[in-house]
Length: 476
Image (cartoon, rainbow, N blue to C red):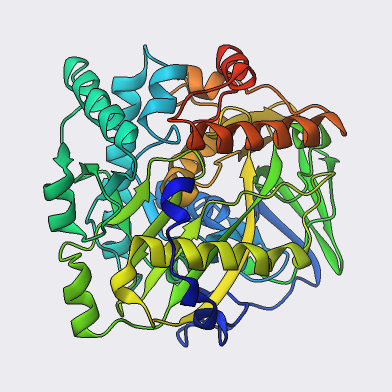
């Protein structure tokens, strides 16, 4: 919500946070499977996957589905899904480029194909969920980008016209104020763009746990509480050390995302940005009727400092976003997962958006790190003469795109030239982030400029315009 709208918030929201637990709602699900034992001793395999989030899980699963005889081991430093894969909003988008505007700006010559590949990837996720019987509350309801200021409504209308002219508007519908409020009733909504096919809602932790169980059933040996400590060449393959043992593998896929990459030269390409979310108690039938939301779409507003929100399977509202916190030095620490001052902001914004829900309580409040790169969408590469592949930098839109990234890593490790590996998006890397204090200073100035743009009709100052020209411009 834009600042002018937020200032009209209800002052009675503070009580709504009184009983909120500072833990991710998704990870408290009673269906959580037990952890697999840690690795002790030495293992050998064809493919070692490092990381038990979506990136590593899809890599292990797709590797076995491509070649059931391939011997695959997966290492997870804590428990599968405990980090970003179990903390996100559960928006599973078809976009491989962190949204169509970012993709069109960076790869205009490839955008049609990138859109097609993204939709095919989302179809494949839906098929895998069904094939493996993964109970993750998968709902392909789409997403509405909503305008909460008049200038944003005009921008959405103009953007929809541009998409129509470029042949990219299939499945995307412009909604005026009456039409968008018919879908979800908020007095702040002035327009919307409904992507009907390109986004699914799901329970993020259940997806991670279901992928783990599917991997185990196919013969992947999964070791949890087993951090990978070092990576080096060993004979014709690679060796990875762990606290109680080691793995020797012909090939290694690194899916550690925001956590320090075993390849030191890759680390400067990502920084951690902390994102936060609230979850309400289940809404009553009367409360649901007050806000509509009959079609259960995901929603996000159009400000630079944006919110994302959706209904859970038991009709809670997840409300997240707005603050994006970069810790000086790019450190990933557990204490950053909890930020009461951000929860307070989010609660106020929630009741500005839905004043008819006054009195609703929040049961959970949490945060987590997003692996952000300077182009806001994944990048890829290999090392050690093609024996190691990596993918990182999904920038908060990895629920769906990590499956595509897994296929890219497998193509690269197999030495195959495919439609995926020939993409400019795959062949080129983003600019790395500078060392401190320049990274912190640049990110802080960008955040300040984005907030200022939201307060001044979306007008981007000289700093943001310069970042745009350098290909570093934030649009969210």
